[in-house]
Amino acid sequence: MTGRPKAFDEHEVIDRAQRVFWRRGYTAASTEELLAAMGIGKGSFYLAFPGGKKELFEKSIQQFHRESFRQLEELVMASAQPVEVIKDYFRAIATAAPEAHERGCYLANSVMEMSSLDLPLQKAAGLLLKQLESLFFTVIQQAKASGQLTSPIDARLLAQHLLTLWNGLSITRRLYPDNAQLRQLVDLQLTVLT
Image 1: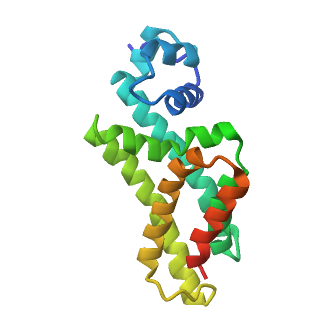
Image 2 (image 1 turned 180 degrees about the horizontal axis):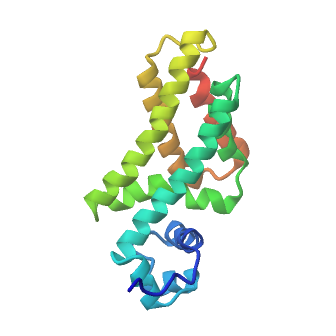
């Protein structure tokens, strides 16, 4: 016996749940609120996500990262100036709507919230952020080798700096939601990429 087939698109319901988690956080998002946003019943929920809310949250951060990371990776791979793609990735923060500033970065938020709640989930979100750092490192290393980047700073340290900048901007954009001001802050931090 194979059971009933799913009557919903798992990708779509995870995406809807992710919006709730992003807005409310893991702790504050109730199962009832998630079910309403996903448009599925409790039985279907636990059949699809036997680990409940925790499994759904973990899948939501994985799905979010996979999609956003793939977009950036494709842009980097297709560009003759991948360092500029990375800079534009940061500059895009300073073009966001006020509600995006209020939300911050989904993965950075998850690392912060999970640090006192669930160490395995914190590590899972942290590993996804480290993939972003690895992409930064690859781009920087290749740009140094080709002469596009002349900074004397070690490529690994530059990549870690960019990840630190990304995580810091998740909070700073809430304090200074003015895009012009954010652009100045981002551009100042990106001066290391010369």
